[in-house]
Length: 251
Image (cartoon, rainbow, N blue to C red; front, side, top):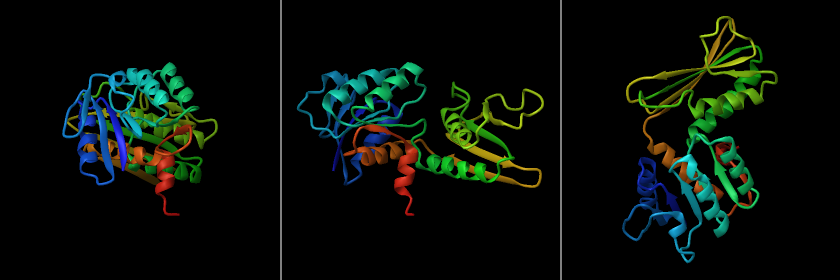
C-alpha cells in the first residue's frame, strides 16, 4: 500500500489520479490538497497538511510555479516527489536538481510509459541510421498554448544525445534547405486531439516511422501512479520515465 499526497487535486489530472488510486488495491490516497472525499483530508495548501499525516510520496499535478512549495514539503518530510507538471524555468529545474540530492525526485516532461518506450526506440533507430533525416511531428488539440510540446522536445533531446553534433530545429520546414545535422520538429494544432507524436527517420531509400498516440489524459495519471510506486523507497536522486521503462523491460 502506498499513501499519496496529490497537489492540484481539483485539476483534471489530479481528479484522474484520485480515481485510479481509489480503484487500485495497492494504492491509498492519504491526503489531497483542495479536494475532499471519503477518507481523504482536504487542505488548501501543502503547508496546511499536519506533520502527523502519513504519506509515502507527493504527486504534483498543479502548475510548474508550485515546484518550490512541493519540494520544500517533500524535503521537510523526507518523502519522494513526483513532478508531473511541465513548463519549468531554468531556475525551477535547478530547484528540482538540488532537491534530488536530498530525496528521490521523479521528473518527466511526459508521464506516459509509452512515450518513454518511444524515446528508447528512437535512440536505437537514430543510432542505426546515422545519416538519416529525422523529423518529429507532434499534434495536439487547438487549445494548447505551447509549441513545440514538451514531449517533442524531450524526444528530440534524447535523439540528439545519441547524435553528436546534431541540433534541434523547432521551425522545421520554414527555413529553406534542410541541415543534415538537424532534428526537426513540426507542430500541428487541430480539434480535440489529446496528443500524437511521430518520429520519421528517413534515408534516400527508406523511412522508419515510430508513433505514440494518447487516447485520453488518463494515461498520464496512470504514469504518475506507476512513478509513485517506482520511486517509493528509492534513495536520493533524479529519476525519469527512462528509468521506469528500463524497470518495466523484462530483459
